Image (cartoon, rainbow, N blue to C red; front, side):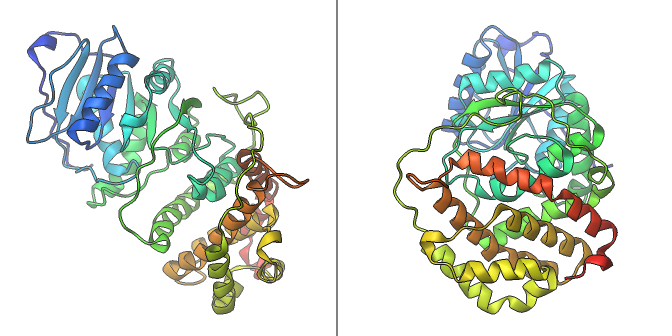
Length: 414
């Protein structure tokens, strides 16, 4: 067990003697202005309710409590990491706080939490207090935001675990006590090794435990930007962690059935309500296509160790297409991602080189997606969410391929 966190509470006189609230709101590091904005939104979201708000320890005392918001500060041996997603330290600290304060539910809020509206905050908390183990937000993002989530994280998670949260690596979550405990246990192997910035995958953990999962609409949200890291490093960090987690949970997803529960903000058939296609300017994708074509010339040796002949043939055809007609078939992208997951598991090549070789293929998918969904008209024009749902369907349809190659890799050598 990792060394227990040291928790210290600072409560203003106005809230002294108040009963322990059932809801805990755990915040990460925020600027004074951002903290003030978050507290204002929390006051509107939980007017008249007894809510405990925990912020990281700082040199300055927390601002005075207002209304029925009780403020506390905490310190922990799992030092929080100033990043762009929730990390192992956040889950470890959140559960320790829940234990300390005997909270029934917890809402973990990530960086830039001041951009979440009061209704969004209330919806997350209400779901957890209503008995749902894991509640994820469904953000309203722009068509160019969260594209790696749309291309890889969402469709793979949906296909493998039979769950439909749109953002499996959401930066805000609502947790029951047992869900928080499970995430803290998963995080502990990292915090014990002082890897506090490691990623943990909440939806996969909930699926492995058989816990309930829900999704609530939260509207627009400002996404924090990662530190100045190049795309290769960023994708390697996220994809590497994700592929490793898929490997660790193989015994689960190989037998998981595609059965979906209805979730808030999702129609009964599990598909999202799609906005009408609007007239848009043609997206600028030439740099992405140049990167893909350069990689096609230079990475043939690596790709041929990972991808079967049919996929290599598909990439050859793509490399010859002019920008106006550049489209990557959903089935080809699904097969590419699955083969990279398999190569990661089998260590076909050095994992760092493998993940680097995925980047130009991802850029090719992004270019194709933007061209397809940026069309103002035409028979093939699609709204962004419509295309992403179709893509997820392709991943579901091709799951038997992944299972077969996972169990009998020698029968499917490229």
